[in-house]
Picture 1: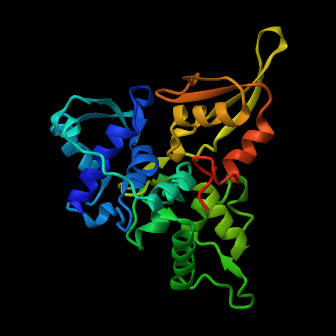
Picture 2 (picture 1 turned 180 degrees about the vertical axis):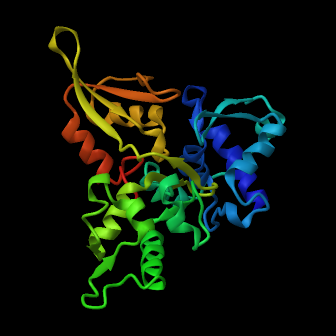
Length: 310
């Protein structure tokens, strides 16, 4: 698998990646180039290699001075430079594709994107640590919604807070009161229905999310997950342009997306730094392309990616 990984990597750099593609998201290199360079009858699986993940393999390639990798946005790595004169690349012989593999590549050339797995998470805030201590979690711990619900349910049952007369109600002890009640409710609300209790607990926790790209370690980020933003703007002489932001979060390379949009929308595109967002790019498409762009990202299988996983 190590040998196959190296061959797919060198094949991609020699025949698919161009200087104009840089910087290139490492996830795009894997999904859009390396997988499609895998010989017919073989399957590239980084987890079965000695590297286990793409980032470690690319670190090794960087040590050999074949590529240079940088984290242009927090938690997302990109290839920023390639030494195409490196002996590893110049000596690599691109295998002759079979007729079958040529047909497959022609059909699937624009469908190699593997979306990241995205999970919504919740962080334990300081004022709720007492509620989660018994379950072994402390301030800043991240949990899935199902885990939060189980911990709260177990806490209520363990401390005999379920109302004996109406098991749909939960009595609020001092810890629960501090976690979910407003000051003006402290002496007025003594019980809550299960669904209200759980909803309030989740609402009072800090949002977070985890993004896992194929072959890479999970990336944990605090705050709300920003969706891909598509807006219509007016330029000089009342000309309309469609602006697309937040592509990198989903492993989409803005330059690759711009190239696809230019072809599909038959309109000029510009890639530029996104205002107010450090190390993030935006794609600008001429004209009102909101409906066309939305359909393209969401359902068109020949686009490099759907907007959301699944």
